[in-house]
Image 1: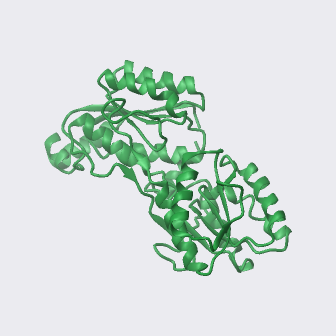
Image 2: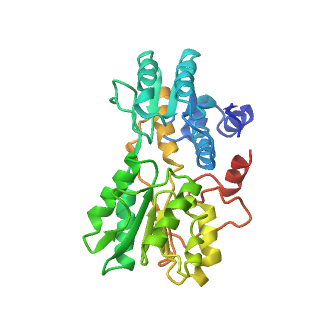
Image 3: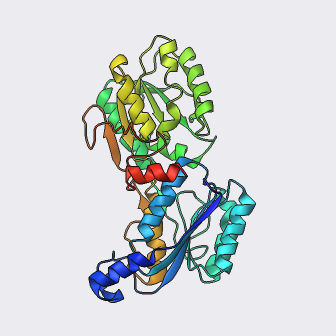
Length: 355
């Protein structure tokens, strides 16, 4: 993937809208309520864009912005994991006159001064998903979070349904102390009582969401714990390379409560018959969190109706036991690094991650 890219809305798309409606007013009549009449430009700024999850998220944000004919330009910049570049991107887009900034603030509070400066200069500023500090209306326009507690609750309820008498759990999350994992644990413990024993060091096994480290951690836990009933992980695809370790110990892959990914769905499809304990439940991995952030930014910049929601709640996606809301999904003809829960069409995701 390129370090930065720019998307400009198609004149052809606008002309098509005019042809159908006869005027911009008619085109707006068919637009969502959060799309107002004022022309505006928007940019999506990532702190780090170098993985497939971000590539699909970029596509989702672009797709959402294109629903509003009042948006004349959609741009993107990748901070490349460099806090100073991320700050520079925020300042640069504000300085050149971009009307609305949607920001994935990977660096957390370190980017807050730049966000606040852009907001006080009159820009619409919508940080999302990663807590950056500050306050709505003072530091930025609106923070759009994600309810990771809800993910933990969903996992906990499913675990209770398959293990009503309790069991041994292994919980894997990202960097030490990350707020996502801590919130998910709150959700899990709000549902599961003391019959459910967490085998991992408190609060969770640290994997940094990195597949190689996940394999190291899981291998050590398998060797140490003869009975693991459920693995809970907040990034399902990172497990795929580690799950074959169970076979080396002559054990079935246990039940998984996690987030979706095509690679994980296809692994289950190919291996569940040889692993009798291998049940799978996923929540949507959250690419569409960006859509709510874009809606807020567009509404604020164009004079549209502000959305009523301020927090993205990931829906349940797959359940190998009940088949609801979906059975396990696998598109073996497409890359493993796509997320079938996303509103971006699977074939379009494949194109995005292949760039």
